[in-house]
Image 1 (spheres, rainbow, N blue to C red):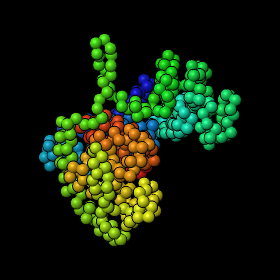
Image 2: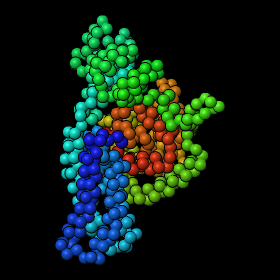
Image 3: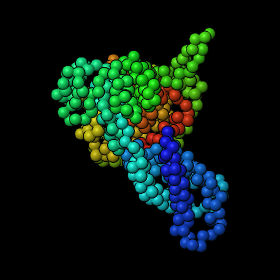
Image 4: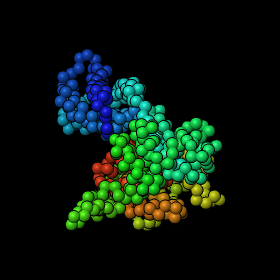
Length: 474
């Protein structure tokens, strides 16, 4: 994470106060339990373990990216804080047991997380506002084909609380019919002058060939390049930005994702990039499978009481079976039967045929809406993991009907089945419910290119945060 030098004092202040509040939370919990006469026998375990607890807290704050959160909405910051406090509670229980047995009061361990979330929420809400106020508005130019450039400009301006101002768009062709067909450019003139849409949002500054002139006139802080721009135009924009010392961001297309993490090699005196395979090495597959078995067994045992209650609620709420079975595709397009708790009315697709579920689908039952919102409907997939049909982490499995359709539209979609499907994945933690299938595919391919056990662990921990947010990926 890049931090401007002028912002370093603020970041240091954040760290100091965060860690101070974590320790203050434990002290207040002791005071609530014992008053001012805290028994030395009980307080000693905290005194011996506070350095480790502090380091653990610091690691969690960094892992959940809480030192760059001005880019997030407050809901995302708060969800991250809940995750930090939850895992801190688990760490405190483990440390108290291993360091000093049961002399660390259980009551303190239960009260401290409640105090932590209150203290951190108040402090971080204030810090979030201060952090955003310290950000200067950055001028941006977006380069690409008209429709994608408009979509990216809209996303940039809405993503960081108004701290990005799109100064204009550069397109590959001013005569592109998209300019005049798009609602954003309705009424634009065709005489080559600056084009403005009726909403007066973003002017079209010209074509890519005018990049040097545009950089000189606008003097942007950053330039964003859309993925669908032809390679020769991307190169022209990158060269211009490097020459003018302007930071440039490239939205990768599927080909560029294939080149990610390529290794520089040499054949005689010729430099070459070695493009890695899209898949998980065999030795790593063994470790991944053993991890899947252990985690799924543990999770099945832990969630068994909840599953009994959910089964009863489904039977009471609507007619039909408790479980929903559906054919899906996994590694190498192998078909399997996926299990879920039923969330829709019985025979929901009998008349319509295969239809992707929408956010407010009328076919979803009352209990089903709750199960989907909390992701509880996914629990039976642990059986698929135990059987070997799925993994805990991997691209989400899709139905054959949609796979066939998507492969025809985007042939690279077939590459996501070079790894076993999963209950959660990179696309689920990085995207939103409304994220397009193309962007989710990019995340799935990035996961396939960069698999490691550490990345799987990171995705699992981030999934906890995603479960707390309604509009994140599903």
